[in-house]
Amino acid sequence: MDFGTNNTSRLLITNAGNVGIGTTSPGEKLEVNGNIKLTGRIHQGDMGDMAEMMALSPMVLSNGATHQMVPRTNNLAHGEEMVRGTIYDLYSMPQSKDVVMIDNKGGIRLSDAPNSTSVIGVISTNPAHVLMADLENGVPVALSGTVPCKVTTENGPIYPGDLLTSSSKPGYAMKANPPKIGAIIGKAMEALEEGEGEIIVFVTRQ
Image (cartoon, rainbow, N blue to C red; front, side, top):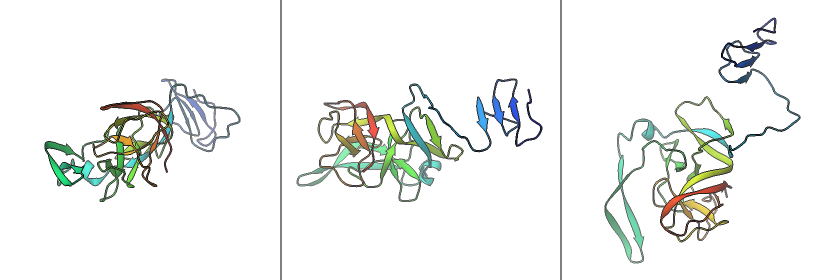
């Protein structure tokens, strides 16, 4: 159903029920080619955050062709000791709820260093808004709002209101104790007293 006379003024309803304004091929329920003026509110239901697509590290895109498997260590009071048999793939594809950091080759990958100032945030699960949505080879990183996040208590129990940072376990956050400027990804909205799990985090970078 076509209500316009040219491509720039056209209101089109497709057979699939998609509505297009200024476009002849809407790919969403509503697609507008042009500026939008809003005087009311947008109610997003259970969608809790705004995200931006961010490019993946070339290492992730090449499936970790080199330096793929990286052994982790524990920092002890009297030096470092290898955690034998524990190997993580830092260049596997980040999933929702994972904590990610900027890779030294560019792009982002799973975080793996505690209190890292290279940490950039958490992969969104169900974003209400997505910036740079057409970016290829990217993943949505939460910019604001609330998002589920993988956490570990390696730096102590986590309680609501605690600041969170990257941990030594790839893709997991931990309590920031003490907090470090540039390494904070958010505030815990829920508790985890022991082990590993998932909690809701309010994104607030510091």
